[in-house]
Length: 371
Image 1: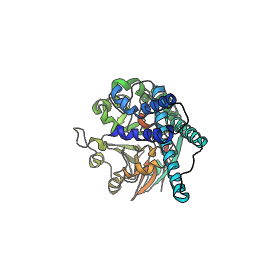
Image 2 (image 1 turned 180 degrees about the vertical axis):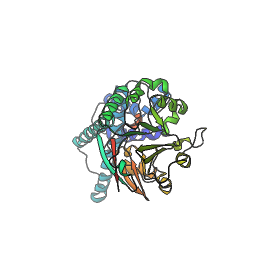
Image 3 (image 1 turned 120 degrees about the horizontal axis):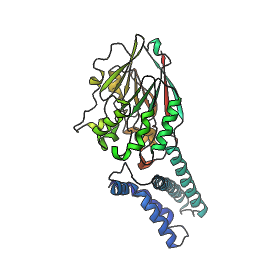
Image 4 (image 1 turned 60 degrees about the horizontal axis):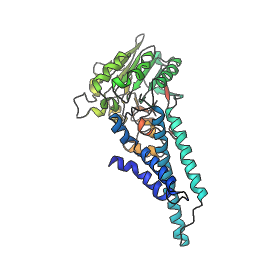
């Protein structure tokens, strides 16, 4: 059913766009076949690589499939919009308007152009985004403290070791105090991703590099990935916390596991356990991959929660749908009770639908200020 649904945009394009074109039948069949294959690229992933999330074939082919599938979806949207306008005109005039062939070609050019731009925005090394968060009770020693949030790297054949090298190099140039990686490091097994993720061992920050699992870690061998991430120098905060000190002043960085652990043999997210033993009165920054449980964190007295998972919705407009599955939190800064929640658009993107239009990726430098 899932793969059938992904084929619906192709069906719209076939029936309402390709068939009316004044092309020779073999040309229509060729284009239709190519777009059909692209629309089923997740099925190809499953058959060829064992997972819809981790295609193990060459990066250019992944990009081509993504481009063609994205263009198909956009062209289907444009065609549906054109049909709705035509229906309104027909109701007003008593007959359907004749659609100029030039308009159809313009729609196709726009769809492929937007898809190409969206893919380029998805696979690039992200630019730096700077934000400031004012925190009540932040000790003066931490005023101006800078941390870098990376999230949803999805290191894979689409975001390979060369891409990770550039992300690490740009991150280290920022000279931040701490680096936090809020889940979804990878797509693929340790054996398949070992070389691609290796550059993360070079990340440098004065107070260290910390991480939490995202839902994708549970798809590819959770225990193996937790050990491997630790071996790269990333301290995994699985329902744990650390205390960051500046002289006598203290700040807490806590992390929880992901909600994907529910019903599995792995530890479910436990905020109480993560905060056990934390110094009273110290401001707490929480790392939680998914943002939807932010109200619970606010009730626990968390000052700031950093999340990812949503990819910002990927495409402006689609973010409205993504927000519904994440308690309304999809991109940017939110005030949740007395807590500030920042939902990062993501550093990378999962290879299944790697397009960004209006929701750019980011390397997010967060500067803490006394309120």
